[in-house]
Amino acid sequence: MNTAKNNLIACDMGLKRIGLAHILNGIILPLPAITRKNKTQALSELENLLTQRQAKILVVGMPHLCGVQTQSALNSAFEASELSENEAIRQTQLRIWHCIKALDFSGDIYFINEDYSSKQSEDKLAHLGRKNRQSAQKDGRVDSLSACEILQNFLNASVIDRH
Image (cartoon, rainbow, N blue to C red; front, side, top):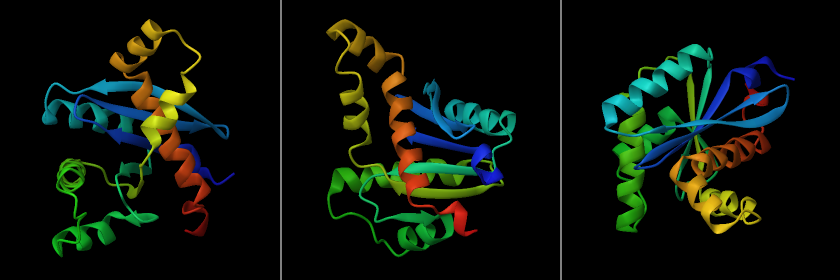
């Protein structure tokens, strides 16, 4: 296994929580989500996690993105105003992009389409009772399972194997 895969963190950047996942010995595992009180606090906690885990790669879910893009490629697209035509999606893309641009992280950053990752995560919890599903939604487990989906999609794309 490529050593870079062991230093990889994925995140699902939500308005209330940042879902997180990592890979350990080839197994994708969720990490506790970061509850957002404000942007500064959330980014500080994310930076601390990246430092503690000695992350070399951060994978970020981005809605309506084609394939996997590096941060520099996505920066060019955003600066050229190549955003979704849907206003709600465009606002989400901009929010995520601005958060990641403000992040103090020296590793590689990749963005990958996150469409349906939350739905897939919720489907995996369908066996739980309604109260347990609601609890998983509130405490961030669903967000971190979404980050697991994002990480799996990234690994399926084999991006880091080519570097």
